Length: 152
Image 1 (cartoon, rainbow, N blue to C red):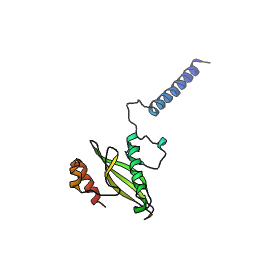
Image 2 (cartoon, helix red, strand yellow; image 1 turned 45 degrees about the vertical axis):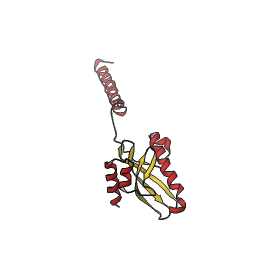
Image 3 (cartoon, rainbow, N blue to C red; image 1 turned 45 degrees about the horizontal axis):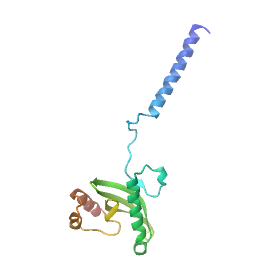
Image 4 (cartoon, rainbow, N blue to C red; image 1 turned 180 degrees about the horizontal axis):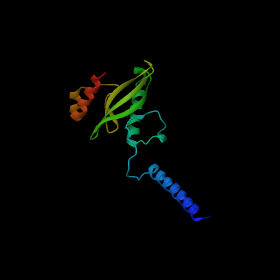
């Protein structure tokens, strides 16, 4: 092989290696780099092994699902389709729920306030702002809850 062919071969190999290195760096960024923005919204009926749930979120969903199932004789069969955290302050969370009702054959949004994996208000009942204040719910969460309830 003459010198010119060796230079072309070496240049081609170096070019392919640099393309591969660039691809690997872009495909697998450092652990401290973020590549996507994720929502806290999640579908409730997906397989839990496919989700990056925290234990707390799935236990909250379980509590809400049990509450929906426990009142099926009164409200008909309902299924939690989607669960999203709207606001979180201390031990309180305001969540939005997308619920499918067999009775009306449609989905609807509902808001609930949770405290330590238990539902304070929402889903089946509505407490007044004064009642929520008396149990220590922060004013920001109460105001957001009232605003979202009036958006219907």
